[in-house]
Image (cartoon, rainbow, N blue to C red; front, side):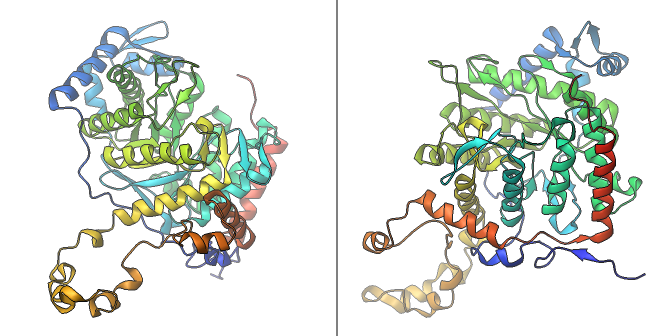
Length: 515
């Protein structure tokens, strides 16, 4: 068989091309969190939240706004009255136990395989903001050019492992065909695992087929293991709506993973107490996961947490708060109790890539580390409670993500004789220094984390360089990356087939915009 033509550049199939030289970054790898999780709840606290969630499912029930979902759950023994479904705890636990504790997702480039579960921790680009922002052009409504630029940044940074939802909504593309253009760009500009929205049957079927075409695999082989995923949100309180359920059910039938993430803001769509908000979140998530296991026993599912609080003065969502941190940690305990991988977010409420943005993001990220989170959504680029995708914040967040990856490095806790360095201490003695010690000289190049964004110069050197602030340095970096970016390789025939599919579906009208 002759070798097929390929488009695009890149090193080792990673599509970095000359952009690899824009900054010196850490190599691609899936971080492994070695820390014991933080567990604010004693065992009886975990049991109390579990019991309360089960009572909600048994006594109150969840509205499933999808007739087929209600039929399936009724046939499985649940109590159905109108839209409301009540299910007993034995049924729920039987279904939840069918979901795997760990699973892999393999995109079109197998070298980009990611693992969900255990100590693995993957990071996802910002997803779904309606607006984009940078220092040069300010805040603006999202468009396709910004969408493509954020996908290029997603591909470039090795610390971003998954190409999640639309990094910004391209409102200049009609909703009926937006999913076609967006998935085409996502599948050609990146070779990482992709997410697909559950926003109606046509969109779901289109994007799954596009991911299959991009993989170059026949349908049976494509569906034999996880390749892409969807994330659904409940309509809190106590409701799963039709488009989300329909999409999740279609993914389940095709053997593709589903993350169920209730959006529970304490004081608004959830009880004002954090324990009550977590109870509601757990009940809503497990109800949908039980349905998906009825449809396809053993389906890879994840539980998601998006439990935070609102500003009780304005009603605006708040993120990266002490309450958010505790809710994430508590949900981590419950996820381990149920044996489910966990998703959380790098969320903040700041309107600019400033100090507030970074301390709220650090709170969010540390809570994810402490909770044993496996997939961090919105890991780079999120501002204004999810209403802005920021170029500068994307770069700033990636600096932090790399630092977390270095924090996980086993070298930092190495206690071998060489690491203990008793001989080096004796060599230097009380009157020398370690700069010139052989122990230092043999290790100095890789001994410590080397930032690409942080500025460690003294004040005089920094001032002489023009006193560039963090966001100004980030501005220069994203521009350098985009200027040098090259897409990852793709088989010419596969790309042509993908383009032909998009063209055909556009001629057919794409997806309806009203249901």
